Image 1 (cartoon, rainbow, N blue to C red):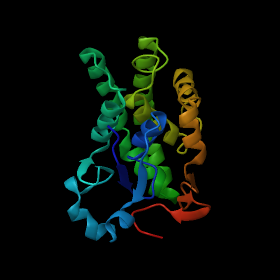
Image 2: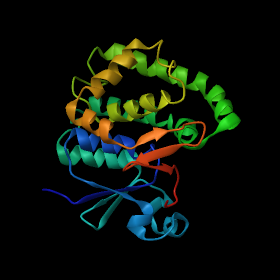
Image 3: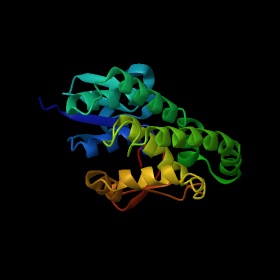
Length: 228
């Protein structure tokens, strides 16, 4: 059954990114809609209308609202047949996904919004945590001895990890140098044609640490929750 899918979010590269990667990998049609266009009002006014008062949200068939990025990822896997049916492997995949999701704070807000000395301080403070978590992810890949975290096919957990590793390069290009297995993982994801096409076309995030902006249709827009 084909569903009408609308992914609602903001001008930032954060919690909607893994779902977008998975939808492009599975060649699932969807519309990406900014919150102010979907609700026709500022986020401050729309927020009380949203389940759990946060985005992203996936609207299915104009009536079902699925919030929380992990729930969205699970739904996508289920409707595309890419879900992991073995209960043990599924639990392991969930562990990887949840571990990667813990990187959201402070990495995503720092990349998308922090500037100047505040950016430098946050970067300095988070490097030990990121390094420790990257060690864990690196070990999980090596222990599994597969192309990706579960098998030789990427799953939601892989795209969640990919997003955070990819974003970390905007924090510090050298951060992953000591983890060649994670670098190989990034390259394996980026070599998938449907993913590569998305990565090449997605809005570029520029001026990180100075005045972060997304280049949307050739126009630079400051990151955030306000219409520009």
